[in-house]
Image (tube, rainbow, N blue to C red; front, side):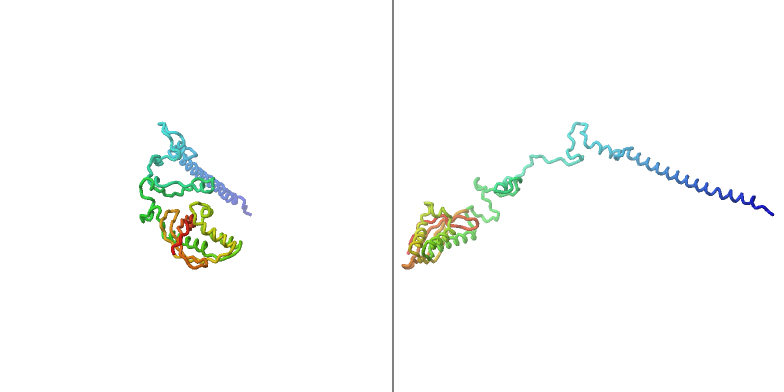
Length: 275
């Protein structure tokens, strides 16, 4: 019988070399990969000068940005070289000379805040120059708009209607009358000022209303404007008055003062009968 042992040994020897060759191939591959990694890392270090912060020329600039210059110059406060120099503080701003800062806190606003920056034009009429006239109409400081003049005429009408066109009797009528008149005048100037003697007829009507009763009827006719300013309007009101004995025409000179957006009678001159 033929033995098979001798023929099996060479086959086993040939198969045993395969694992060694595989391991050797892996070792070679790992060696090549490791060499590539080491070579790449060395190139990066060479490019950056071996510094972790970027190295080289760029790293030197970054590291020395906060240090004073060698020649004793003042370093840039921003820390970034090459910034444009600040403009000199003496730069002229002639446009600012015609304006004034207005702090809203002066009018009761928030005291913790700085100036609001709101600018109002100064009136330059004190130095002989023309006053501020944004619309270019050539208006004087005392010139009023047609709206203001219309409001002044309406204020004169309301005064005549309240002071001379009234019907009532008793203490309650007197209070009602005074309330109506006070809505059209600037009290107490109208009642107490020596410049307002024309308040006497109104006081007489109030007294008659409480004691005897009144049935006055007045018809407003016109208000002739004579003088104006930014805060005053002076003119003469003409109206017809019937106190029960027939209609008569009267005139009364009125001085009106600005009251916010409207006007009120500040002073009244004596009542004059014209017919």
